[in-house]
Image (cartoon, rainbow, N blue to C red; front, side):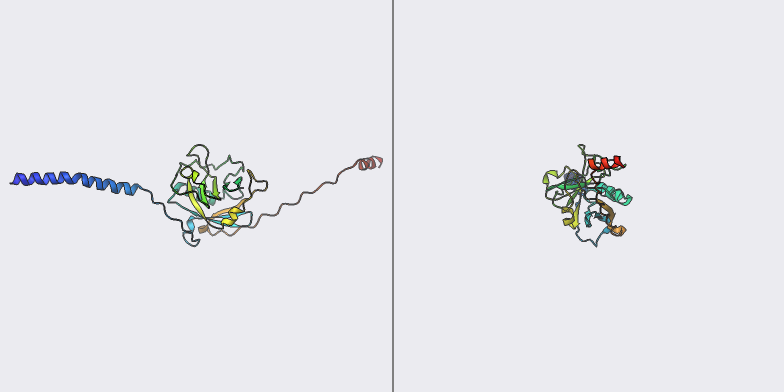
Length: 228
């Protein structure tokens, strides 16, 4: 009788073992799945993750940074902004109906920071109007400092570029960025800062002085000079 009871108990444990293992695997898989937080559009909340761009068109743009989407890219943007890296940098590639790209101090689209390139953090978040994503070269792991803001949805970019934020304030100012590759009169980032640092809006750039036209020298003027 005792042997029969032990045999039945052993059989029961054997039957339960795969079920317990399957449950553990499911929990581990669930824990490994990233959680993509929704966008918070409130400018008064979580200022550490709000990037403010003061533009040369006199406008301030608010961008919600999303660490749950792309933690390393968000950290890179914060680091460079606090270093003043983006201050004075132009929007060098602005395509109507597509996007405005910036973040290259050389203004050519070929430059970046001295920090190492980032590994991609592609995610399922769509490239919709107001999306802020990292630019890169042919390599998926070549993002460094350049980023772009999307004018209209471009779902063909999804999972090919790292989407790390969204414009949550003053998209009209983004729409007003001067077009061109590069623009003849490019819009600049006067100051990039985090809302938590409470930096004031910088003074506007002085207007360019009008070109002084030299008076045309005629043949009569030259003859008059030689006679004198």
